[in-house]
Length: 425
Image 1 (tube, rainbow, N blue to C red):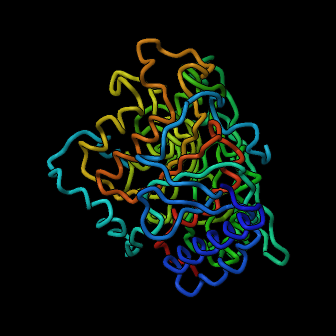
Image 2: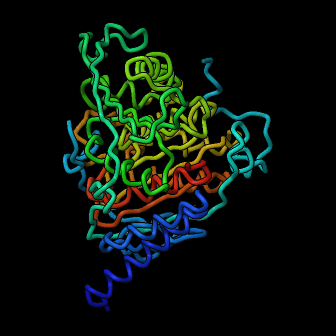
Image 3: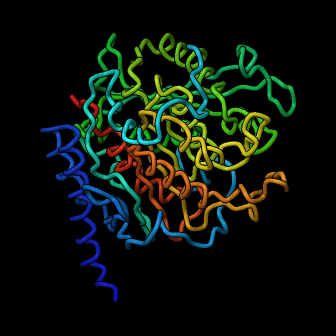
């Protein structure tokens, strides 16, 4: 029996206050007070853990389900990048993940090594694990900039592919193309200092969300004063497209492109300095952009260690001679067979996520068993758990692929979890 709406809303607000206060206090020390004070307007956003540890999951009142996130019929949804409902404006490579000499019982190394390069302490397991949420999904209060909060600046520049050594033309047409890049700099940024940052794929779909969230949460001392680089991919979508080449390919090409061609341009154009500390670098994305974010950390954990994905395309879209089932191979065997990497990974997938039945791209019929987004993300969570990673998996009941409503509700809380352990001034 469902409780009256007022009771459900009150319960949800209590859950959200508890989550934000607990995680912020664990991450930031005295900064935690701001979290609870602003959380009460979050609406119906409680959460319930499935094998999770520490604080409860944020996001809508959900009921615990068995296994890894609970399975539902994987139908509906849309393919490609973030759904239309998302809103908003428009070094040397490391081993790619084959088996190495590390013993199988080294599964705790991902946590033990989490702060080895920068002195960032392992934050513990609060918020780690498998969680389930359900509709109705409501936008988090952090998406509206509160009165009196200092606002960062969002600027954009365009870049011709003709200047790129890695992606000079659209692979589908061989034509030169232009990509847009947005850069958010918080009001608290101190010129000349190295700032933590997030690198957001399909950046134009996140420009309406990331800046207000960062404005609010930086001001509340819930997140560090970070820069956001929001970058659009090349044209098209899916197999054979430029976006597909950049995002779905399992290799270090995309992260090399970011490091050698995008970040230097950001620093010189806007007179900012981006940290080289991998603990202060995050990769974010949805759908194929989520797969790209994980691939960045997988191939270069010396550069990126905080990974956030929604409906990540850990499927066979990027099949190649090296990885015959593309990103499906991460959860099929690469994570299990490789030494644990010092990554912190958030995953989300939805009940009505993409399947081979509803993806609009031309798929390879021989790989039809490897195009289930929900299954792929459930498998990713299980593989990361077995290897001892800090991971957090959220199953969204009644939602679709890269669901904008789910993102609007959960993104602030998932960013809070993602950045646990990093110093906040």
